[in-house]
Length: 305
Image (tube, rainbow, N blue to C red; front, side, top):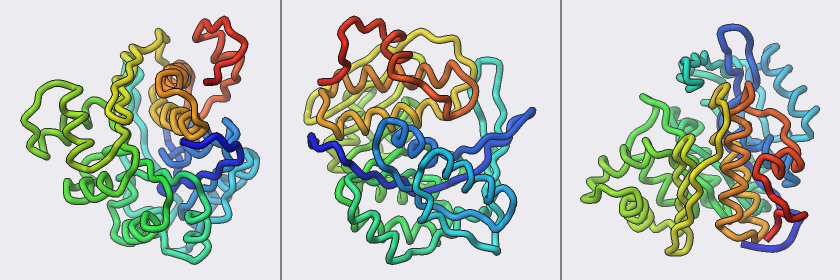
């Protein structure tokens, strides 16, 4: 993309509390992405809505501590701050019970939001926020103002339709899916293909999107960028839980591509961060550049380029 350094990002969508059997942590895919982007030096704003309650107050305090701009998080009395019950299986994979309606389902459009999105370099959004028509209408309005749009599918049944997914993918400049989402969307769009690469190209052409990335869990990811495929086969890690690993992956990949780094090195670095997050508890563990370099066994002094 560009090589300037003072980039601005906006993440739009759900902010909530992930409630585990023994504890709870702040989460929501857009919030996880915003936290990781902010830690990587990108000034990031989160647009969402919370309730006027203790969970909402604690969430705002957390964002302030993390230096993430929360000026565009609306506070309303009608609905409570979002809560998701998370179950982790023996392999560390998560399943979610997402309470509806939550305050983030009711994000209403404001001039301040329009200005923030218009001034940003990248706008990141997902599909879950579209389960309610109020937040969906706000998202559609903001997409018309965004310069560069990154869509993280993040499918959560039963909260999506193919009609809405196709609309979101068609508006995006960059689409991120996992392997299960690739197969599901390809089938529903009646793709004639069976291979990974053919279906990635099929979705890129169907939605007129030049960049598509598909994550493969422990086996890395595939990036399709300007008619070329890039591969990373993954990094070994003892998985603790996978919550937020894909969010940190996307944040890192977006930041590095935004800064003009090569697609291959950007993909490698993003896969390493995703693995390190999966090796720790919670969605947003702190990970230093030194820790990443050591994990990747990089001998050169710079990971740039």
